Image (cartoon, rainbow, N blue to C red):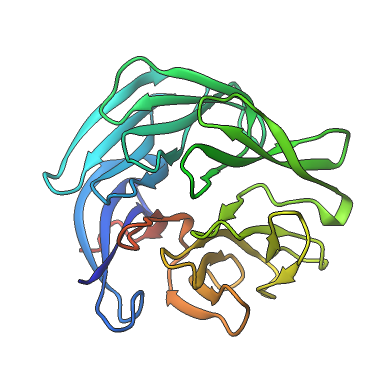
Length: 290
């Protein structure tokens, strides 16, 4: 079965997004990628793909307000699940069973400023989960807990947090400060639950690192200097990330090694479906591209 990467693309001129599909053939997933445009979907800002590959949830900025919509990939139709609101809305994750969407709402943009909510994939009453959530959340393999970054405690520090999916049981796994601070976008858990990958400036520049669950076993995976948004492949053998230095989507072996270019696109916030390896993210294209 081919591996598909669904990507939201931003037109350079009109700031209008389109939904794209990246197709890769076996035996080398994520290579020889062919891009197929599906539809235009407006001024999207953040996006996530469901684990089953059926839905793409995205935030849209229109008329000075944000709303949340869900795109059904197979029927090519969309539904608004959160109406336009003041402030900033951002899609953070789908639940592992693809039934719920987690999103943040904040008065001002920035890491650690949002309140995290849960809503059914096709809409309903949102449920408040917790305060001061980071830019992304990552579910543990057991599906009952998720990890996220939080600013503090103390100035210049941030913490890798873990909580139950209903927001209870918050606790810090690790706290870092100064040059060893965790990056804002992350973390991501390996499918087998052994490792966490995250971005950090502990080497002097922003690179992707891996560590054990107890905070030990630190290993630097990239050295591009402006690497962000790490995500594991479904089998845990690769870490997909965005290189801001080369404006490429790349992958690196989870155990370390040479990185490989996936696409010569400046893909932001890439997320990988654990089922088929589909990728959702944002990239800029010419508004007249097919």
